[in-house]
Length: 312
Image (cartoon, rainbow, N blue to C red; front, side):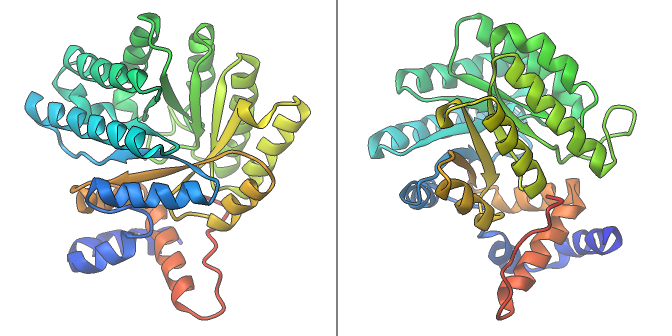
């Protein structure tokens, strides 16, 4: 399968843009804020929460980063105006992290302050390992400055994740726990599928022991079952944790969680950089290309249910 996944990725630049848009429309809300709003309204009607991500690629100057900040402020204003159940999720490279940590921190503080004034919340996405230390440093700095409406992401395939949890424990962090999608060297990241799964369960326990609020972000049905077991054993109320999934992925599993009374938040990306985002995410993790191709094939054939592999 790995050979097929890589072959799909190599072919993507030759695929017409309109075809890529058609393939990605289930997983990306669209190019405009109105597209994201329409998706969130539908999700809310289904009993699901959302987190909106403004797509931004290759930010090269402070003005572009300020434009991303304004785009997020527009999102927050529209969420408040329409009474949507959605927060926002942001990559620090979109706020100028590559241009300097001070610029990025200042941009993020503007956004977090705006969200706080509207009773909303900002999640910092975790990017590849080259941004790991800078991301956690800015998160800690703003939390210690009194910004409580700020969360972060930890990736279960990173060998350092347990140490990161213990370093952040005093902050009682709000954490999205995911497997991780970037290709990292084995010295810093687990590469074995079962090792990543085992570490995910360990990290979930560590986070709950530290008093963290956890977004259990996975499409792996086995990990979902482990999450359900752990929160049940601890007697947690549904308001004390949530599950998280990507837009358009494992909707059957997500619907089941909602029916059973668990909170589910869906990641909703949108923006004019949808094409660059699609290619970049697929190139970073060729397995995702295989998932999308298989899911699209399943949906086109009568009688197929479009379920993703539990590896996701």
